[in-house]
Image 1: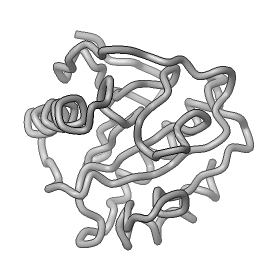
Image 2 (image 1 turned 180 degrees about the horizontal axis):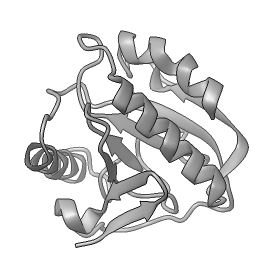
Image 3 (image 1 turned 90 degrees about the horizontal axis):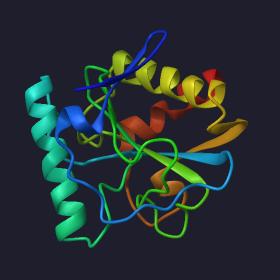
Length: 171
């Protein structure tokens, strides 16, 4: 099992959380212009085992019920700030209809209409964004938005959406 390591950024790999093989992949063409923040609108997971089970369930739902080639998100984050690889940096996601070709989707695991995002969650997202820029996956001046900014949805929840300016200031 591998974990993707970068100074101060650990990402639980697809292999580690038990991801199924994708049915197909489309690579991004160049650096990504936008980051779209989501929430899963499910219960928050509070331990690694529970989060990994939740990821398998989300992937199965996306592939079997939604007809996606894989889990829709590029990355997911738990309330304790643990980062998980979804499709990763190089593969176009299925997280925001009509907006996937130039964006990375990051979903926070939980329902943020009810919960406040934790400081650990926000710090992990900031570190992930900095990693994306430093490794050349994200444009240095990328746009950060909530799913509701590009679609008719409440996602990423009232409280997470209200926290997005904190992410914009550091990215």
